[in-house]
Image (tube, rainbow, N blue to C red; front, side):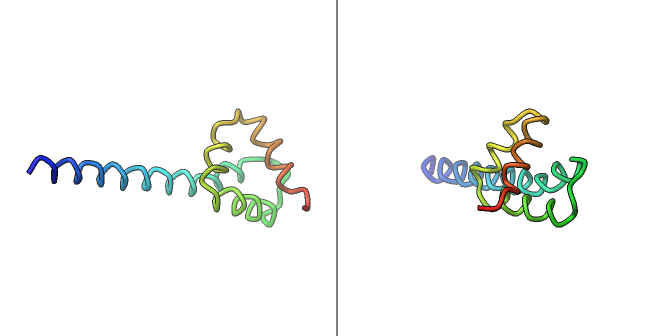
Length: 79
């Protein structure tokens, strides 16, 4: 029975991790909206680019605020 308990614990941990990741993806747009000088279209475009990739989300939130702005500017450069 302890094996089942262990599996349930791991499963709960996975759900919590996914829930935390989803919250961070939602916060991306609100963080970018705080940046002055961006149009709504730019906010949405950059937010989508970041939120669609979990590694981008992690990277974005690891940056200090002034670097976040610079990163957003880089993402707005057309490929």
